[in-house]
Every structure is written in C-alpha cells, then in structure tokens.
Image 1 (cartoon, helix red, strand yellow):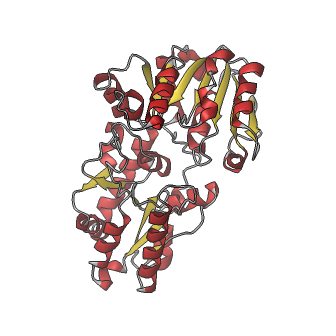
Image 2 (image 1 turned 30 degrees about the horizontal axis):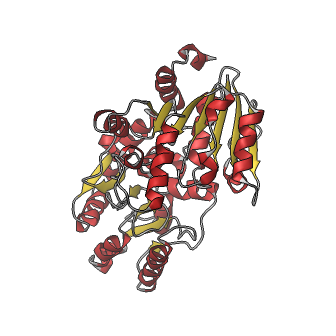
Length: 393
C-alpha cells in the first residue's frame, strides 16, 4: 500500500506522525510523510528507514501550493492528516481523496466539528461551513482515546466511522529503565528520599493549573518539600495565545527556586532526545490539567490530552484530577486528586512507602505494553479493514 501522512499545522505534533509511520511500515508499504521543515529534527527515528520518504514544507513556502502539489503528484491508498485546522485557508481547498486515498483525519477537539451552528460573527459562519465541507472529505475520524470514540458515536451521533490511534506507542527498546529515579538516587544516595515529579507540556494557565500546584508545594514544611523535585518539562510558547500565562508560570517557578524549592523550569523547548531522557528520569507524571480549560470542550472526553501519551511512553505512574477520564488500560497505574493539597499528600505517601511506588511503577510498565506496536496495529488494521496477517510480515 501507498501511505501518506500530513502534519503542517504544528511542529510539536511529531509523535502522532512517528506512530503512524511505525504502524504502517510493514508488508512492503511505501510511506510518504509531509511535514514542516522545523519538525524534521524530531523525526530521527524515521530518517533512513526503508520505504519511508519525508517531504518538507520549507519555511515561507505556500501551504496552498504544497497541498495542491500533493493532490496532483501522488497516489495513495490511505492518507492520514494528524492535525486539521479549519481556520487555515490552505485546507479549505485541499481534498486528500483526490489522491485516490481513503482519508483518516485526526480530530483533537470533537465538539467544534459536530456542534450545531451558532452565529458569533462572520468567522463562526466560515468555520462552520468549512467543518461541514470537510466532513464530506473524511472516510475515518481518528481519535487518541477510546472514550472519545464512544462519545463521538453515542453523544455526537457521528455518521463517520472512528478509529482509535493512540498518539504514541510503547517501544520497550526505547524505555530506559536504568534512568528511572536516577536523579533522586544521585541527590540522596543514602536513602533515596527524593522523588522526581514532572509536569510535561507547554506552559499555559488555560491548559494546566500550575499556580495551585505551586501553592500546595509552598504549604509543605521545608523538610517535606526538600524530598520533592518538581520539573516543568516544557516552556512558554511564543505563538501560544496564552503566552502571558506561560511567562507568569516561568516567573513563579523561578521565585520558588530562589526560595530554595527544588523546582526546575525552562525558557526553551528541549530537543526530543533531551525531553525523553528527562521524562525517563522521573518517578511520577503530574497533570494539573484544567479539564474544561478549552471553551466548548472537555479534556479526556471531547478533547484529547497528551497526559496519557506521556504516561505510556515513559511507562511511569501518573497523578491526575479526579474528573479526568482515564483509559481503562491505564487505570491501575494512575492516582487521583480532588484538591490540589492532596497531590503532595499522595506523593508523601509514596515517599514513605517505597514498595507502593515500586508496585505502581511495575503496573505502569505492564500497562504500557498494552500500547505496543503489535497490539495497536491489530486494532487499527481491523477497524480500517486491512488484512491483519500483514502484522507478521
């Protein structure tokens, strides 16, 4: 089969691109990947692979011409779009079905695509028309979570079939178990009392509630706070609408550092390799996500979140707010908090009960295996009607 994969909206969405390429790089398939030039440095796992060709949209190059060239030049059996923004005019005139392919489009937010029209200015009318136009161009809607598929079918009454493709797949060869908890062992080799907690993601007051985490941390005694290393594994994003919120998070974290708290933050984005190393060094992933932080959407229901991808990829336990729906496959390695003060009560309990932490880590490792390339490929191929014997080739 000839497979096309397109991602020209977000340079940070390289993981879904890699996932789809790995899933379909079997049975002699030929894969062509169309991405922004700036994403290329994060696609190192694919560079040099047989049957995979990467075509880049150069800086300053017209998106419209780039997409039209795909329509005119290539023939595909399946064409994946990992991010589709109806607000980008170049997409208004692009139809992947003109390549002869079945189109599989990832929708990161569902309600905006399915909700009845409500007039809120000319822009709202244009976006509504474009969304409805695109629904005629989509053969399958790809979502990252099982619960999103259920919500799309049961609540939104979608007439388009959904396929669940996790944004990341677990590769045991990439898992660096020897790194897990290493920072804390180095900081306190005598009794390893330190626990290393990371919050991955762009610094945003809309997406995550960092300030409440900081307040809860300051509520601890100095002795207890010294046992916790908190790393904000992201940075403010200049193009993000919430850039001011991102900078405020960075400044607040630096004030905590000056007070002596073991908080690490960045004013730049780490490379893919450095990010992976740091997350593999962690004991826990913390997600203080604002479940209703995006207007009209609910994280974990109508909108996906990278939290679970990070948990799978790093194969470590997570701590999340009670209202965030958890995939059943991860339920045994995820802990919940209702109030932010409870976050550090949970963490302190794990510090004082290392066997409990180890049990959670073992569960996380087993849960991640449920997202192996073999497991995911069977489900995806079955939904798309692809003969599954290709898995063994």
